[in-house]
Image (tube, rainbow over all chains, first blue to last red):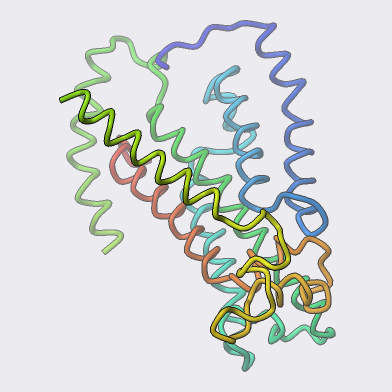
Length: 173
Length: 98
């Protein structure tokens, strides 16, 4: 976890495979209406492609693809898209999560079709961002290569930890 | 002691197998969950979903319709669980704030 080896074969094959994984993940998400699949499965595959790049090339280079700072906002936005779809239907006069009430001016079956799509997209975004964020948090904030010595890094992060945790709680509460 | 445990476990396995043998055939139209009405005469949800999924949502995959439309609250809960897991990991594992 702490050290990356610059291996061209691993890096190249991961870069070769990743777009196909992502394409198939998008297919699974958007074709969930017609075949097995949907937000959870497609989101997990999309996250797997991000993690493949993170594992093979390193977290630093993977920032170009999916930034570390996108993880928590992404999972929040995905969940909010789901909640928001239900709330829009609620404020338009229907029951909560009753997609027939979405104010889009389409016949009812098409509205439900669209509502399912919105919900699945929210789920996909939430799952992708959450899984990537969990990996990023497990690995840590910065790779050790940026520090002169490991001991300095350890003391630094411990101090930052003590400062950061109450701030996190206050921000959420 | 081990023998007692083994006997108890085997008896339990026999009980489970006996129960399984009496279950209706999988996918059988006469099985209680698949009939339009339950044993006490109330309408069953499953047969409604199977019959009406395409008419209601114009979506051929009735699993998706059930998951995201008829059972939308359940899927909302699942998404919230994943969100909560992510937030818990952030709070416990994140080392420093950028």
